[in-house]
Image (cartoon, rainbow, N blue to C red):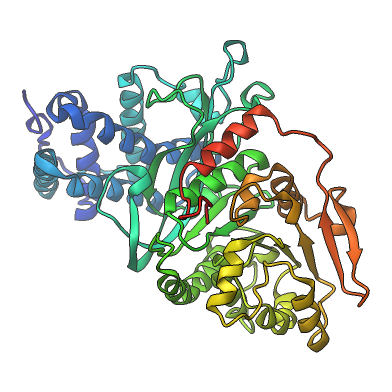
Length: 526
């Protein structure tokens, strides 16, 4: 087997490109020329290595339709491929390091001709690599033209297939050192935030693929999963760290985005699965971000998670600023669950007084689902919050046992997501509930023992949340809500649902798959 050597380039007259540019180009040349031999050399590692490469290149290939103005996007991608080679474990990792080092040595001797177009060559090499990787697959999902247009290749005549959705993330968790996509991030704090995107596969139970040719950006459909798994579970297909600014704001249309902050005792993979369900139901070209903070994934380490949540506040505020100023967005909505409400609310409050530059996005809806947040503190923060966001929606339940336990840990001080009229009245005597805050009682929609995950297990709650995040519909105009008040004239809303007797069978299967992972000791995903 001959590797590397065939690409040694003779010097040619012309302008000397920078060493870094030459290294990137030469690395991609080596990769493209040696993919077939590399497949044999890596043996059992090849499928995982090639799949990660494919997922790295895919966003740039799709973004070509809108144009890639900044060559730094391609620099970042090439550097990511190099990082993949340098960090691959085991004996094959040592071989890949040698391959990268060989390409770097050639680059020091390489002269590039006059008129050389760096961006075009990088794009050509990446496209060649992607085409080769697709041809190498046992069952290519779609040809390059279809992939670039974002159209579906689903076929309803053969029964429901699977939909793969793309979610972006900002994580302040340290990488675990494992290459399994669902286990990429661990429990420890990161030295610095990292961004990227995660691809999640779920059953196409609403037949989205057959109902229209166009899918949201970076989505794709297939009849069979690349992994061969035929179950109705939700799977993490890939998780890649990379700069995503060029993917989020890739065109001039009005753009909105949603950022989700998960709660206590939650793995990164679980948060991704939850939001994949929301993305699937949303079904619009709206970027969804997961802000993932370190969780010990243990019901016995509540105080540890709370310390990590507090530590993450500054990072969340900084990420919001970045989204509003660097991602070419018009509006950013915030959706938080459980302890994630502490990160979201306190992060937003850090933006009080912040002077956003001209052209920055503004904040839209703030949705708090089962918020593990001090009720009195929330009432006092309302004035600042209503100056920051369009509206606040608080989903709570009288049957939330997880928040009842949190109250005990906090000296019986009420938690915002535990719906108790007495505590709400007590706080409202001191500070009136703002007109921009809707309290929604979802007590009748708990589907689990602990009653803390209704925002992900109840179709009615999911649809109502989406009416807020997607359409900005006020509570008065949402048919699933009924106005209610106490004899003390405290106004709130009661979720009555859509009136459907049962969810679709496919939706029940999704709920079951959601409950199959990320549960606490009492069987509740939190």
